[in-house]
Image 1 (tube, rainbow, N blue to C red):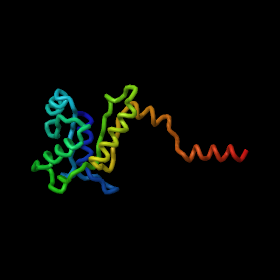
Image 2 (image 1 turned 45 degrees about the horizontal axis):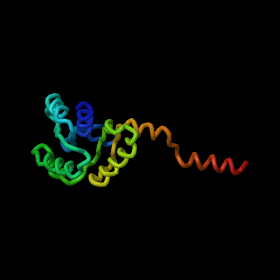
Image 3 (image 1 turned 30 degrees about the vertical axis):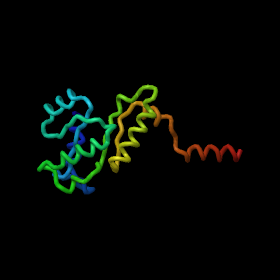
Image 4 (image 1 turned 60 degrees about the horizontal axis):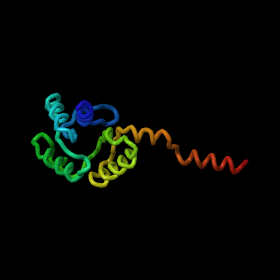
Length: 148
């Protein structure tokens, strides 16, 4: 609920480079597979849309967005399929196969929801990213070795 609150508040502001203005067009939907978590979030943040859902079932997410955008407070132009930004907390996928499952999950979300951005919170993805380096660094090392 707390992360959804932060994202909801951020979606309500538009920035033109110099100032921030409150906007009625931004909104956020909090989705979790746990009914108790969603019930608690709804009590704590009654002004935000929350729903029980399985993120692996991407069609379910698309239907959910379509249901939520028929609400009077959300402009009709936002009821198109897809999402602008997806925040994925992949905490449960951190076992030995967590990395492959996480990549598969993110690929599924990207292909089905076609967001402009996917923001990821994942320990296994963090570990992977800490081991990666830019190809330009590798290439520079190879070229340097060949010169000597």
